[in-house]
Image 1 (cartoon, rainbow, N blue to C red):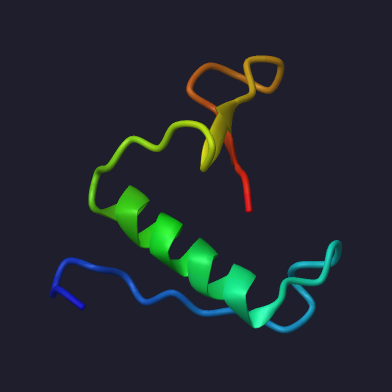
Image 2: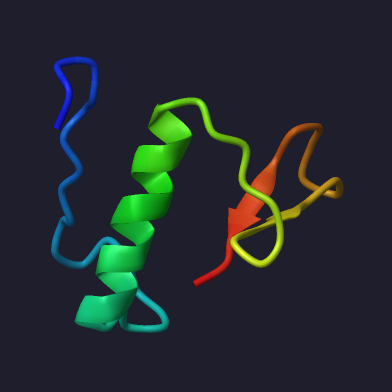
Length: 61
């Protein structure tokens, strides 16, 4: 982890549905780290959600 990276922590009870498997939590960790490093995610990892707002995306796991 670089000095500029923020720690990623899973809080119990924060993700309600669906329950994430270990593999899904690892994948989310990688995707969030890429976002912290300024990467732009696209399909299949991310999908725009213009109904929510400009520049809003969902992570697809």
